[in-house]
Image 1 (cartoon, rainbow, N blue to C red):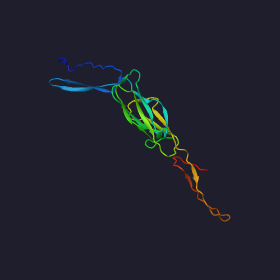
Image 2 (tube, rainbow, N blue to C red):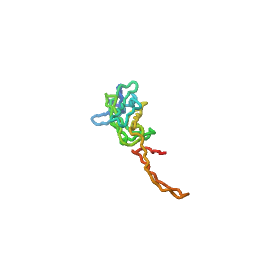
Image 3 (cartoon, rainbow, N blue to C red):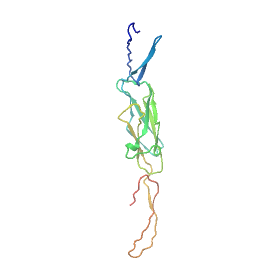
Image 4 (cartoon, one colour):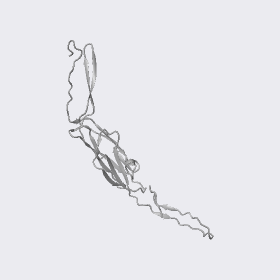
Length: 212
């Protein structure tokens, strides 16, 4: 109530303290009277800190021809004093192998992973699993590393294990070299004879093969 002779009145709004991590929330206050109306908004800040996501372990390994997959756990942790989240928390997983490894594997060619995105729901569970599956091919590549990281759509801080490295061990042996038989006529004295000799590998290699 605005008292007679006054143009304004004040009242208190008290936030309710809890232990859940909330996004920034808005309180809308509306005032009405027979002749006048209006409203304003008030932003309620967050004081519970930010959630933390990370891979449960830093690395794992699998053979290319294993026929299986690696299951990688992604964990959600709360800062001190917080007990959970009040709204879904999106997480994006990306292939960062080309930027973080000297022997990078390529998503789609050397391995696949799923899901590429998910959300931790409010109230629960605090662990999601990402499945990494190597692609078995016939190319000699040597061991490669599939490196997973968190994308920009992840709305959380990142823990110490902000990346996970899956080492994929190659199952193809080293290429075998064969040299074709060649015949050449003896040249005249003092004349060089050039001979082209065909050198063949028994399988494709992703790396250069030096023959001596």
